[in-house]
Length: 294
Image 1 (cartoon, rainbow, N blue to C red):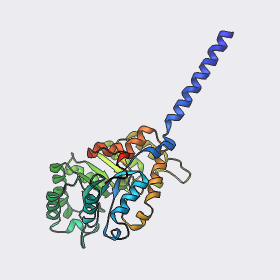
Image 2 (tube, one colour):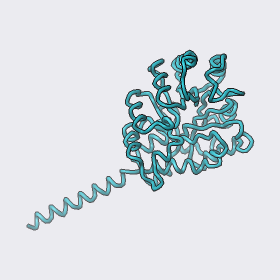
Image 3 (cartoon, rainbow, N blue to C red):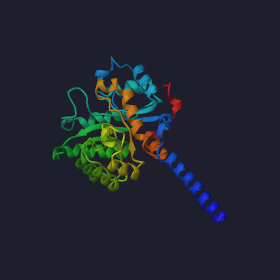
Image 4 (cartoon, rainbow, N blue to C red):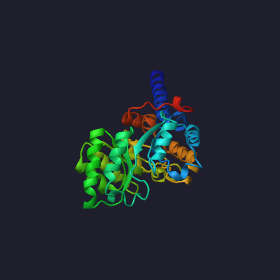
């Protein structure tokens, strides 16, 4: 009887220890504050240049633990300015928008591919985008095919703000593309994002503007989003989307919100989304040692 009691006690202690260990490792929790962040959706548009000079951008990044950022801007000079100021912290993309060319008409500019090609020949970009494809017509297909072709030739990512259909079209044109789906499809539900990632193994997503979809006001992770993130932890990155000065004003808070929802996942998943996926995509080392440097 005494032996049986000892066995039961030992099993109970072992079970408790296992439960405690699992509890510790289920979620990264407060340790999320230690991780460097790669901001996969930053803009430095012309309206920000005076109120938020490059020094201020880097201060916001440092204060928020953002070691590096993927940047595209309207016009492109904004990206080049940040890149010149902090070459070790900025990963540049070429955005089509300039002058009177914006998200509504960029695919209709007759010399758009020439504009992109010339800048790609001069500067060392690592992606094309972020550009908007609200709807795609037959008139757009020639330009999009040219962009897909040059992305493959130059080993560039494409960063697209769209729903499901334009992503399908781009992959139909060139199955080997690597695409970052801005805002994880923006309004597409998690189940659609999951199906798309299952279909295309080189489809990635930044989660900017999806924070309130992923996590509700009481800090609970939506079940559908938890499923897709845990199924594809190597495909997501966070982003701030500083398209307007109001986003710059809220930058520290935006990164805090992203850290909060990441804290509800395991350490391995949180590390992937915070910075490791970007390391693999861009071949960069994203480290806290970059904070405070240029």
